[in-house]
Image 1 (cartoon, helix red, strand yellow):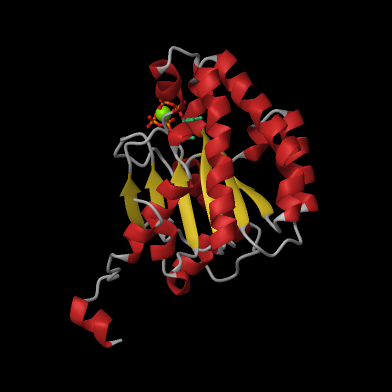
Image 2 (cartoon, protein in one colour):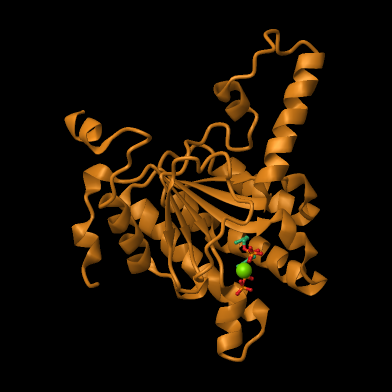
Length: 249
Ligand code: IPE
Ligand code: IPE
Ligand code: MG
């Protein structure tokens, strides 16, 4: 689909797009290279979707970069991913500033190596006043971890009387998630032809539109991203209502 960008309705953009970036290993294997080579090339696709989001004027882009379960991968691969994170942040920080992009992280970032934590804090601090796209990296993230973490913190706040009224509402619960100030995704994309959520944003995607593509992550480019947005714009989000109710609104 050429010129797909011209078909996108700029008045009707999703506020938040989340992506499960999958397929680096298979991409590398298909050309006889190591998994690490796949991860290195995955960084190009990160650049593509970040630029595309910023250019379109999307407010939030969340990228699933490392899951809680990914800690069980071979040590060498984990180390590659961690050093890639540090070098990419270092390399891209100027571009983030130039393009008015704010960096945030979600997940159990305390479990990341100190060096990674330091680089991330620095980048988050430097970009904190930026008002364009918010780029959210999910690192050492899993939804079940996040939910249990929220429940434990709520329980502790009740014990310590930080919370006076013990009625737990959706609104209160949401405040204790690592995504507390981030709206729910409108669109969730997963690459590599896998049809699963892999413990990502389970609470937050209650009403997100799902988009699956066979493309492996390092091959995913701006046009693929635009195609996903265009697809979303041709769907009717009903939130439990009938079609008629939506049209009469
Ligand atoms: C996604 O690619 C990157 C991470 C999960 C860190 P994979 O490494 O999962 O690649 P495949 O799924 O094995 O092809
Ligand atoms: C999901 O990909 C996690 C990230 C993209 C960071 P995985 O490759 O780890 O997912 P599964 O194990 O195939 O479900
Ligand atoms: Mg995978």
